[in-house]
Length: 188
Ligand SMILES: C[S@@+](CC[C@H](N)C(=O)[O-])C[C@H]1O[C@@H](n2cnc3c(N)ncnc32)[C@H](O)[C@@H]1O
Image (cartoon, rainbow, N blue to C red; front, top):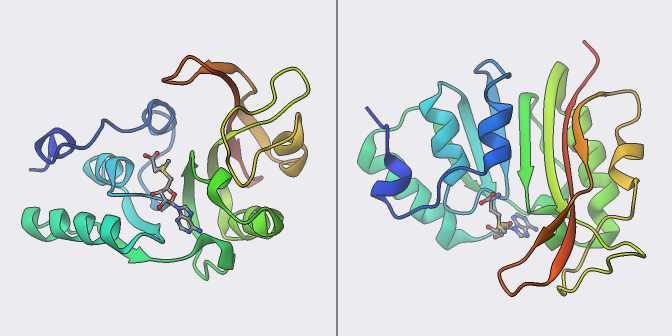
């Protein structure tokens, strides 16, 4: 039994939006894009999702692979992959991309989102959380990419937006930063 793996390995709990999304999404083939060392992938696997976890950090993927191997987790495949390639090649029922888009090459983000959408099965879900930079709240952090107001909503036109907000959050250093949070369902 793998309950409590996150704390056993010193990982943070799964992102709260992943926890919320998993309350409504039935276990299926899922992709964790920018998984780091796997806090969300491990959580999803314990709920019965078959998870592919990708990140371009070999050390993060090594750590996740070590946990998977030590614990005999059968339903996580962890791979080094550069998301900028926008070439997923496999279809999923759920693709989660939490606080990762803002680290990508800005010139590739449209292609990455288009590939995520194309690789989502009919009736499947995309979860995206990404920093924004808006007139009212210019992003105080130096991310390569940030979303404009309304940009993510526009990119998902035609999908059912189960959750969408562009709320203001506070960073560890007290700076205020807007985040787009979206759970969207592809038409069945
Ligand atoms: C802030 S962490 C978020 C990790 C995880 N999604 C979470 O919610 O805890 C961003 C992750 O994106 C990964 N990343 C950044 N650029 C990437 C790229 N081009 N391809 C794949 N992963 C990337 C980083 O290595 C890092 O693990």
